[in-house]
Length: 114
Length: 113
Image (cartoon, rainbow over all chains, first blue to last red; front, side, top):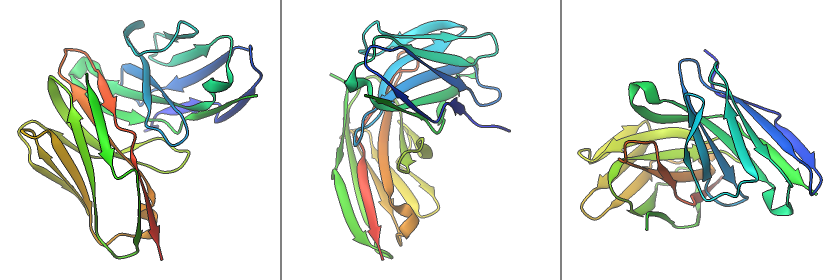
């Protein structure tokens, strides 16, 4: 049983560019949440997708957008990259349909903006 | 304001020693509290989860306690090992009908030989 998988593992982008990060949830999970983790900080909630809709959103600008596909996988898109967007981006999946809030995390995507 | 504060920010202990990490929260309405272990550059891994009615939960050498009245939790690590070197993150979930969670900044633990 594969856990949460994220791709790519590392990424380097230039300021102003756009980036897409991908996440496949744990088998049987229907909800995907995205987090940004700056170095030395705890993860900050970006948004959560369930049934292909954004259900909750943290304090992140509209440059951060996402999508969930029918197979429950998800993408995080960031436009007009800033140096401050450099961070570890974590994806977590859970089984909202069964009321289970336990989140399983992927290994993360390390994004560096130069 | 919903907040989760952890202390200390970092901690250095010798292998074999015990340690206790603290988590204070001002989250309402409370649903559950989890402790995660996060190795550098990796995703967090769940250690324990406690609901409002649970006072303690163990997972091997890790024991978490919860005092819902004072809104405090602790994670006690017994007989530390070098592999315990990691960040330990306290996460509180809100009972809002959705899945809102508040993460602490974490405690960075260094175990030295």
